[in-house]
Image 1 (cartoon, rainbow, N blue to C red):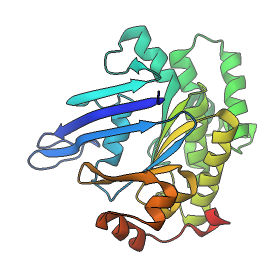
Image 2 (image 1 turned 90 degrees about the vertical axis):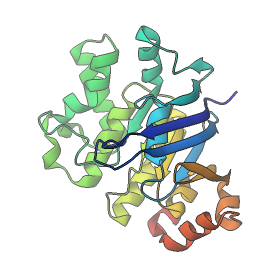
Image 3 (image 1 turned 60 degrees about the horizontal axis):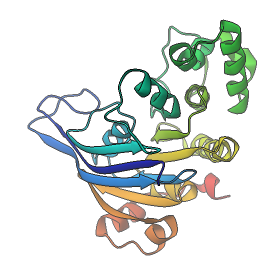
Length: 266
């Protein structure tokens, strides 16, 4: 059984709303009857242009957005039926790394508070245990413990993304949705983050849904690639197949339009 199994997911946003709370007109079916499975330890890359429904799908898998219809199972458990303590247990196993390293960290909180927040919400541990785990996770992502008492504005974009990754790791999740985690970074810094994610997957036995508009970036990380266009899954296959012998014209267009992540291929 797959670790994550989504079947026939549909999400329509009404006029004036979308996944990011910005204004739109009319009704938009952001995700249209999408089914996707992800095996334990696998990375599935989800690619498509802006507005294709990638982020909406990723957030639905974590139940950050409720689907209009369809089903989601995590390790055999019905995610949409879960409530109360069961939902809290599920959320410990499923985390997200956000796209924007500038907007996703509360500027009023120290790094220690930011990284330790998931444990403060979900686990009854002492403050000293939380601090110790936060320091450990910062070291894991390549930041010194001295970062603990500083604030987000004191760090570069790449360092902020590492803080976000440390936060996502705090509860030792099994599944992480990485929602375009390198799109706001320059190529060399983005390559470092991609390599870090690959290293962390081996170290913590993580399963990823890696969302990106860049097929070359996804090719480096993913076992399989799913291609979305206008809310629909138009192609799904192994990374090698999608990159070397794409069937859909839209996939071929994405390949032709996206520059290589040179540092990641070294």
